[in-house]
Image 1: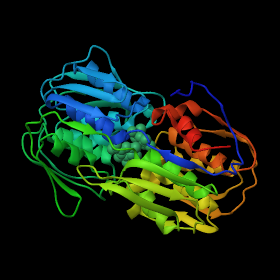
Image 2: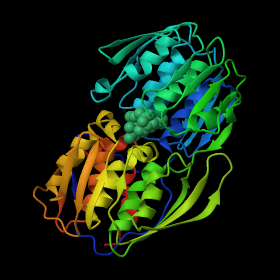
Image 3: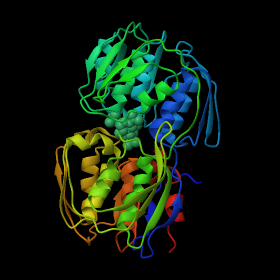
Image 4: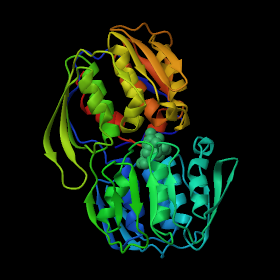
Amino acid sequence: MEKVKVGTTKELQGNLQTGLNGELAVPGDKSISHRGIMFGAISEGTTILHHFLTAEDCLSTLKAFQQLGVPITRDGKTVKIEGVGLHGLQEPNEPLDMGNSGTTTRLIMGLLAGQNFQTKLIGDASLSKRPMKRVGEPLAQMGADIAVTDGHLPATITGKQLHSVDYHLKVASAQVKSALILAGLQADGDSIFVEKQPTRNHTEIMLRAFGADIETEPDDVTITVHPDPKMHGIEMNVPGDMSSAAFFMTAASLVPNSKVKLLNVGMNDTRTGLYEILKRMGGKISLSNENSDGEPTADLTVESANLKPIEIGADEIPAVIDELPLVALLAAKANGISKITGAGELRVKETDRISAIVTEFRKLGISIEELEDGFIIDGRKHWHVANSQLDSHGDHRIGMVMAVAALLVDQPLTLAGANSINISYPEFFDDLGTLIQR
Ligand SMILES: O=C(O)C1=C[C@@H](OP(=O)(O)O)[C@@H](O)[C@H](O)C1
Ligand SMILES: C=C(OP(=O)(O)O)C(=O)O
């Protein structure tokens, strides 16, 4: 499987008449792969992760924990971590490079805030523009000492004894919640965190599997963390990433004559927003081989369909946050007006995803209005391409959504910055190719 080379402008062939057909096992879940390394590192004993996501973001996490003194080896997609326990991490000799990964950065801040050494975190140009106060401020309330420059990386974390808190989150963010839970494990008493809305809960589910004592109330937003757990290594299969499967769910729905089966996809209900939205739009999608040991999984079969427009508001956003560019694409082909609001968080991802979608969609002749917190899209069966030179804006998800969009126009296009796709899905073009018989 070839990574796309840095600086690559990729040719995208349009006018796909034959449809997408076949079966595909998408790569491992990014959120779960990051957490598997982190939680394995702070447990006692060996952790083995199968179907680990070997994309740049998760490799940033792997390398950072090696620098923190954790023995980690990788053989293809299998990773073995010799855990050092919650108090066994060592001061790194050099700054830890977070690369492009917001998840690595925010979670590691919560973990390192309670260690007995100092660490410096750096990141790439995109990550260095993303907001870190959202995690620094609540951690400071717990006694953390995190110095950032104007709310951004680089950051210097000086480990301290942390204090328990009762904190209400100000943003709906699983990254902030997870940082606080990791800090809570090292606090001097029980901490309570209350979310604005439920967000992905992999941290809670996985930490429990590693032996930590974390309670979630039936309201799904109140979490109690008991400190100083006895954590042990585990062996786990990382489910296929719903956020990667989403590109093929969208492509198969929109490209005529398609039928695609996506194998072993993670179906945690804090992540299945796109599945629910696609069904509401009239998408043809069915589940088989459902499994609910630990993180639930299923095979998804998706066929071409005539879609209806949709309205989506703030309540639905967390479960579809990374798939919203794809919802915009589905809406662009559904006859009529669709409206997505309450999605202001898209402005602080790898790029401003609202602005990037508006810019790139207009090149394809899609009628889209930019809102501060979303978009209004006037969907049409046919678009009139105005500019064939697309750009990923250095953002993996924008790159992949435009590659899917290119399947729907009747002329070749180019995609600048296609290498950004390596951040979460290096095999994306290979996998797409296996579904296309031209
Ligand atoms: O916790 C995680 O693994 C993630 C949480 C989300 O970010 P926010 O917490 O900033 O919404 C998501 O966009 C990101 O891709 C992964
Ligand atoms: C937002 C994303 O990731 P992160 O915040 O970890 O950079 C993403 O993968 O879409």
